[in-house]
Amino acid sequence: MFIGMTFLTDEIPKDKKFLLKYFRGKSQETFLRYLIFFGDYENFNDHTGILCHKAWLKKLFNKYIDLIYVHDILKKDMDIEKLSMVDSGKIKIYDKTKANYKIKEQI
Image (tube, rainbow, N blue to C red):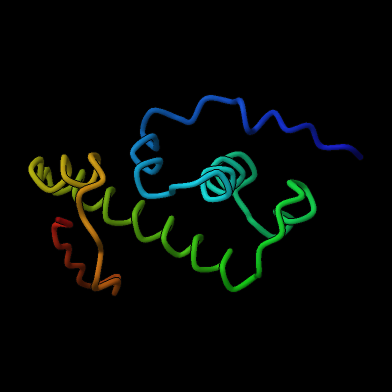
């Protein structure tokens, strides 16, 4: 079965557009679009033809999960200031525990 590359041209959902600021470069943006479209990255290399090590794909996946998690927590807590920082791509998550998260501004 041939998989068309429609996920590359499909619009990223509005609530996830902020992720484009954290996934830079052609291969990372392709990974993000693939992940949003398929919900998994297991066949990323085969479907896209972009060769990436599984460890790198896992790292990108964890980055995606952490950003979505923090974004959802901030939205739930109504922390508009930090949420706008996340949306603008100006933060880095450095404590990724699910019980407690910390962010710092990038300069």
